[in-house]
Image (cartoon, rainbow, N blue to C red; front, side):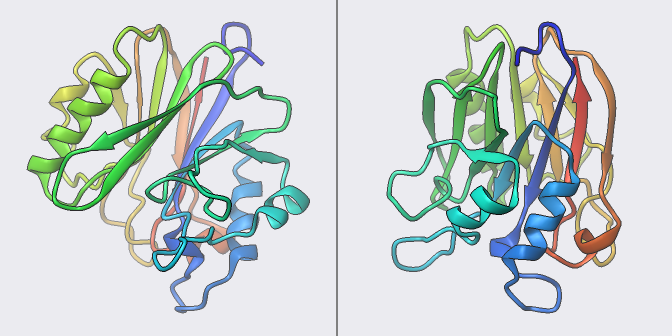
Length: 226
């Protein structure tokens, strides 16, 4: 599938290692939410557990059996779904190309992952808690994508301001579909989707119904683009 001739739905979801507001780790609840997004490409944050070899919060076999998605091979071991917790799912039939790991500066270990898809590049990111670090991290992402014709960056930007801290994405249009944090009482638009030139945003939103209300402390966001 190429976005040059078909609309595309992209989504982003911080799954909090599949731990819900009831403090129970329930991967199938996350799977329900993912399936309900009806997306073509999904960026997941906190997709892996922190300890040991950092196994995926959702088993690969579960994703294969219970969803219509393939896992983009961004992990650097056999058990993780992502890198620095960032994973990318693509709907079956969408061919994933080159994967690039982007080291992000800051005190915390952070990274972003980029995959070349059919007609564009997609970056999944989870930025740091401090703005001065986030600014540097967005500069690193922009630099890693320089020269690419069309790019979408999706993830947990951890930015409470609607404008500040996003200057590094001056060539992008940055969209916050709505308040996505905290799931129990959404007051902040931390999760965002940034698009380079060549995209037209048709619709966007935050999922606030069903298991999404308690499957994680974030709500998933989505955007329809052409």
